Image 1: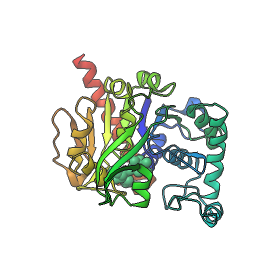
Image 2 (image 1 turned 135 degrees about the vertical axis):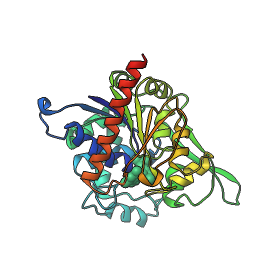
Image 3 (image 1 turned 30 degrees about the horizontal axis):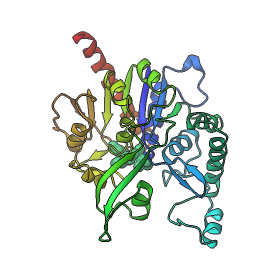
Length: 328
Ligand code: GDP
Ligand code: CA
């Protein structure tokens, strides 16, 4: 089975670990034993240039998580990380100081910056970085073009747009957002291989990633949403019982005028896109017109629980694809 997954960082990466186990495509799995393939279309809207380095937080979170280099407790960044470079930069008075730039992580950003400066597109850089991490999935950035999520805020000093990372990390999303803008999205095109992977996929599965600034950013690259909508699409709700499981997705949903509930998020993603939607047991009874909603436990509390969620998503996709086939 060929599956395409548009993914953000922590929620996406953790789900992908479960999906990889379900499809038997784990790192090091011989081809003949594998029962499928996974292409991840990574969100690059969070990307930011700091200290001359291009940083791609979501691509790196997926790569480190699936490659065994993630800080498990934190969910992002390298394991065994130290922060000497960050301290030294601060000693020079370099700004910003709010970004958690680790020493090990910095090596990744140096490789990326060097390759980008030499003229390689981000997709080629990502492939080169994955040569080391062997994530067991094909990891593609959503685009090779520069697309950045900016947030329009008004903190009393007037309205201004700040980079998503500044809003998310420095302000903990506590500054009310008037608007969230995907700068550069309209002129962007999908990275090489993205549309082909979707076209050849048996299903698209949306992990429990942030619906606005992760999945929403990927869908905002012209051509991607349309290509996915032609497929059987099943999503996993990142909202349980009216709240995000972790992070501040509710602040993002507020900015786009969507209620923080599993049902409202499905409606926001759209019945033209979604065929099926998994919600937690706490949200059993949720109904969304035009979308098959099923409830089951959705906390990714450990490898087994996560694998079971991924299996449920795959099973629902298979079931709905069969129905789609019957209806023609
Ligand atoms: P980010 O880029 O690191 O913010 O990560 P993502 O966009 O991939 O995922 C963030 C979303 O994952 C948040 O909205 C969380 O609510 C959701 N999430 C995290 N852990 C879980 C979990 O165990 N179960 C579910 N259903 N959602 C989760
Ligand atoms: Ca992210």
